[in-house]
Length: 287
Image (cartoon, rainbow, N blue to C red; front, side):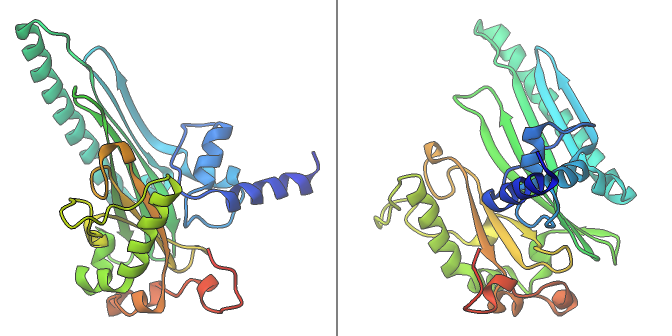
């Protein structure tokens, strides 16, 4: 295969995928390269380059009859001592909680004469983007505590290099209310489109627990960049049960940064945001 064809294939992978997480230890597999390259907000590099950056500098796993535990974070996070220390502490806390719950439930199962179902916590932090000031990370978490099914949840973290401290995405905005007001219409419309893509008609019955569009600020917010310089796109990750029954699964609603959203940003972070290029001109392609 010629270099030109290889490059075209890489571009096709980047253009044709959205948000998938994944990372490897030293030599990423083809699947992990594609997964890393598909994170919305990643710089427009080749999939192998992006995968290499997202290969975890820290990956701890444990697999035995009591629990399955895994926790990983990328090199970008490991290069920041304060952030790495926080993630190591978070990993230890979650492992300890898993072991404690599993031990308790296993003892109860043995006393009750019924089988114990192994508990698990699987968490991968991945870089969404890194701008001159901010490192934006996303995490997808899979847990199982012995019930009828496991659970998917999400987490988010931003490292502010200027102040050497971590922040939540909403810390960059004037308020959660201002954030919600700026994206409410696009967010709610995005949920309907995502449901329709699964063949689901949005439930709008007045007495339905899922009739109302929830505040985006109550979900997990991932901030991304199209060029590695400015934050100009975001994804709202929605866990099961938030906008539909468990069977619907989770949703990831991709949205552009608009002028209205930039107006809701705190003055301190105004220089870190800009309107997504694709939305600036009616003649530009949207995405």
